Image (cartoon, rainbow, N blue to C red; front, side, top):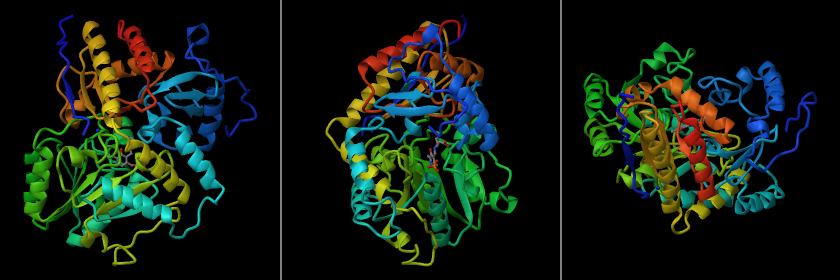
Length: 465
Ligand code: KE4
């Protein structure tokens, strides 16, 4: 086959049942064995049929609907360690990990025991607790660029609030983001967004007022010239540049050497704040995120996913002078009923404590690398062109024969081939993100045997792909 089969692998150091009465019960199987070699799906299909009448698209977050890969999503009933189990009794090796949070594995005993105790103390008070102080101490120690932090309930709230803060601090309205980067679904950030928006081909969502969208400019990731050009063409100034610490929402794309430092320098030059969105990269690359790997001092950092340990937590933090602009210390309003929730804080604290153990990130990086390298090697042998990037405990294999350094490069991927690969792997019991524009996540629960089983499934899936 005349295709270029080289695969570039860039690596970062490790610095990183609403039971439906009409859907019948089945037993849960712990093995990956498939009856007659295929997935049972009766109950999931029954639930999906019901769900689509009650919930738009049958899901509470678009990427879960399998629009980009075809078929219907399995409905999940439980998870433990590296395994996730659907309502038809199929078991899968899970590489979504709830889109990043489950880095220590599902239902980790340390986390579960702590949560069970916390629940007996009540689930929400709407009042300050010592748990938030503990979580703040842990977070600020991990991210020394931050003097203060505010907890919220999602990554979207974190980035939305960070943008408001940056606009208030600078008195400017314009923001610069990057095509293909996703920062949650706040209006100003749904302009050429990645992740689910890119997956569904709606990077610019209807419903975002043109008057607001015009204040959002998109640069090209890894292209400092495109950023400077936007600064230059905005004499009224730019409030902030927001960037994913390592983009995972166009798939994992690594910053070129000097890119992040260059961004920081441009922000200083033009008086804009640098917001580093580490909702995904924070605690996924290493204990301290991309800013530790790239030695960057952002003005504001956004966090989420891992810091909630599977419960809803987001956070944004930064320099004291900036953060004290926030109500009630300052005039910038931001609030949340469940912000700093004691159950969510408990899960986050236990998860971060587990991640502080020696050798954790070396192990995560080794697991991610061995899986990624193995898939790329199989693709090479099978004549399937692909590129791959590993960043700590996350990676993406792009089905393209050219390097992927930005969203344009990611979009050159063969999405049909990705969909075939995804479907074959799912049938083999491997639960991958249903989109080329997402990251694969490993956890401390993934074993050598899991990796071997996954590569065995890949060996079969690449045949005639
Ligand atoms: P949430 O509002 O979904 O908690 O976080 C938004 C967000 C912000 N910043 C980054 C870098 C993110 O990756 C995200 C959310 N990531 C997606 C997965 N690519 C969440 C999955 C989904 O949308 O269902």
